[in-house]
Length: 182
Image (cartoon, rainbow, N blue to C red; front, side):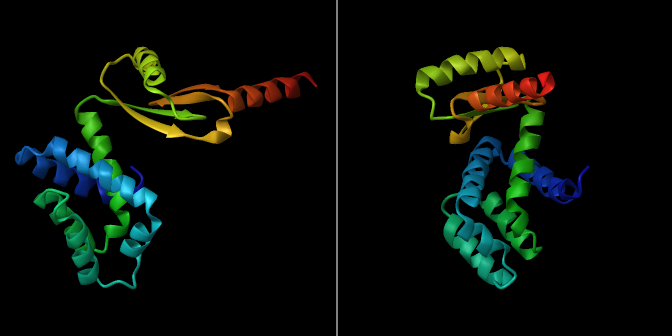
């Protein structure tokens, strides 16, 4: 187990147990995704929480002000606990681990679909059917991303499987094939 998991897993497991005992698991998972999105999209927030310059009490006050009406009391307690223990800088890792454990417990496969441009509803629906057949399960969580460097097409990651149907991938494979010939 990597060192980071050694630190984050106990927090994630304990928090999931608390959420289960309070019948808040689905709500907490939704909140975790929202906070994770905020953490990843707002470097000012993550930098401030990770900063050694801010005192623990200031971090806790900021967390309370930001999230007291947005999350369950148990989630707010987790945030404060992480701040108290100087681990709030690992919040994203704790929440990612929490989501991993949640998916493992419920046999949910995570499929990351990265496309060159945003997919419309019909494209998402068609792709979802294909990904479900590849994954061998209907129990999927889809994470859609856009990466214009793909030039066109998409890349699907499900567990250890990768399906690269992007133009960038085709160009790369063509380059490798040409390199073998010469």
